[in-house]
Length: 234
Image 1: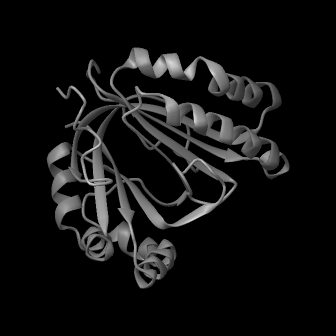
Image 2: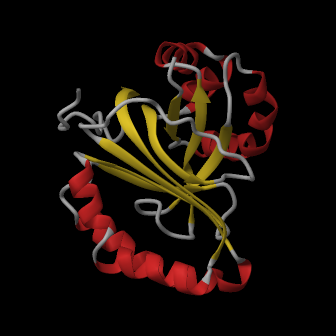
Image 3: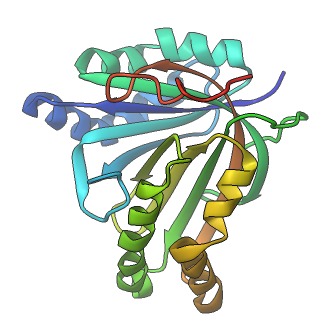
């Protein structure tokens, strides 16, 4: 069996549903640990625009989780009570199923992802998670609009979003690319590369995690379609 990581996104349009989702950032912490077969999990909010801003988007929330295998992950996402409750309230939801291919760093002091013994020749997802030092948060967020504009203009990226556990201090970026070459071209050039150098030179982060995944499948839609629709899936 190979570990599967899921990122589930939920968009809430009505005010009462947004208030419910905001409250669930606390309440769901009681339900998620009781979900059968779930491993590591995190509840996240999102930022405005593509999510790469410090201004919260009260209409979009995310659940990241790990599962023992693909079949179990699809079954639990489809039938577990906590995910059903989110879907029943959401105007739209989408889950992507991922197999870790490389991981460096920790998340909340743990190593949550187990690398699969497989090659990733098709579409790839990249996830970065960082705890920003409070003393440099302002400097960090000054860099983000430049990165956001570049990734937003890149025709190669199939999907991108910024989410986080704590506004301003805990940031997660997630993107999906057609292949490793086009992902690397973005990561190593322009504003993104400059930001990475600044992070390294100035030691901005208290904790970091960088992970890549093979994209296995998805469930649901986002903005009316599957973000994987135009990718050459295995």
